[in-house]
Image (cartoon, rainbow over all chains, first blue to last red; front, side, top):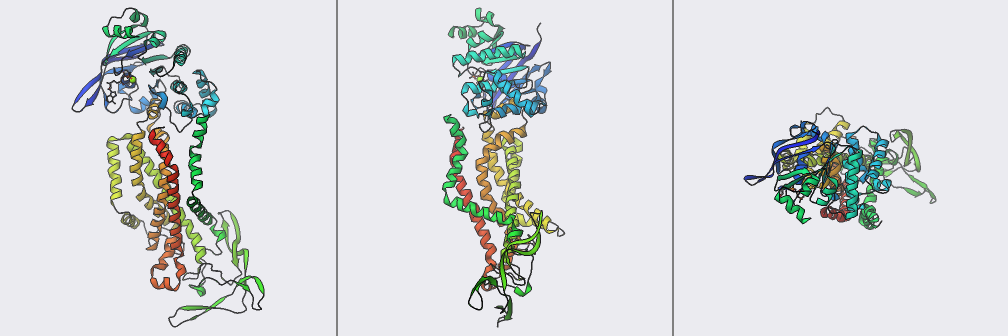
Length: 259
Length: 367
Ligand SMILES: Nc1ncnc2c1ncn2[C@@H]1O[C@H](COP(=O)(O)OP(=O)(O)OP(=O)(O)O)[C@@H](O)[C@H]1O
Ligand SMILES: [Mg+2]
């Protein structure tokens, strides 16, 4: 059996609504093999983002993890203290958010913000950090890294910001990247570039990726395996082409027939 | 490119807006002159703050002569004075004939160290001794009010700046922390703020002042006063920053910074507080007068800076008796200086607010 980078078991996340609480993630189990790309698909509101945020323990205050465990490299992240978790975040697990349009602070230059992550997690000196940032910007396929470095976020287009965000997330060479809808809102050509970029990163950096999306096209291009989710539950998992060819669950079937 | 142009000019825009306000520019210039004077006080003042001349107690403004006794134009000079008493035992001064104390630029006077480095005895202007030049009159001990005003500016003007920097550091950090963490921490901090805001500032100031030991020297008293004043100022700022920080912490980039493993304090300093800057600049300008007035009030009632060190407040304590003001109105000068400074800070603050307003609106739109 292939070793797993992350293993989620029976994860329950609930939200308090007045007196009663409702499970928005209900006993979800999901694992990602080392060096693989897993697609998490499902309709809007099915709880995909919630799972992603649970892994790095950054759920909104109203949401609470009520049970289960998240094993990362064999250790349960849910038992980690705040400062230990901070070392995991950014350094070992990177995250690209669903709306990266606002993911950069408008008052600082893009390069500086990527640089900040390196300053936090590595011991590189000033010059090496800058060189590394330029290399990262180049790696995600942005033109003229020097210029992008000096730009403010609003000077980049949405797609450029998305890629800059990816550059920031992989700056410290994490083991796992959680990419939440990295291709929605983007036109097809940029989408194709990002797919290519992910394949590249997966091969070059041995990066495992949890790709959260509702776009089955992207999944079929990119993912080794796939998990289908609806109403807070995972209804089907398997190798991408197998699931695509012969779905066992009704919901998966419906999803496939729509796209 | 268009976008770039726009972004670069946001603060530039505020600046050019400011330049268009004549009131703002004039007041900023006056403040500039006052602070310049305070920095180079030793050089600009003809006398040191404690240079006494008992024979010249409450001497009025010196009469500068341009014409000598033969009716010819002459290099300006003043005459020495002697005094008699009138029926109310008030001194009346008369000029001694045949004494000429010429006016000089870069006059030789008391020795001092310019900026604490350069040893010299030159002053910007002055007259030959034993004459005394009083361009704003003298106080009870014959000390030059103009010189003392300039030395006093050092204390009165610096207290505002230092006080504001301490209380703003406190207010920004405490407010930022309260808003960012929310919950219990927020609750405790806010109740604490309210406690400070509930007690009337002046009484709190007196209470804190009474805790300062008598054995303190004047520099220690100065520091104590700064600390006391900053202690009163931080609470109201902290409340407002907390409010801003509550909305700012929900921004995506804060979540992104967290996901990148950045520590909370770093996030507060880098990602939350910079967005309160437009507000803070205005608030700083508008709150400096409070510190200047606070020091003046303490010194006026004798609890602040002690004679012979000059501050505008303790100079003004001379003017507490109406009879004194009637006989020597020039002892009100420090009051006028306080008035001028406070007005200038208020106008500059107001102008800045008007200029930065579009930026503040931009913040609300969530740029
Ligand atoms: N802060 C919150 N407070 C209350 N309910 C929340 C909160 N965040 C999410 N939810 C609820 O949790 C459920 C799952 O949300 P989630 O964001 O994980 O969905 P998603 O699968 O990412 O959807 P999408 O594809 O639209 O991004 C939704 O029903 C939503 O209403
Ligand atoms: Mg989502």
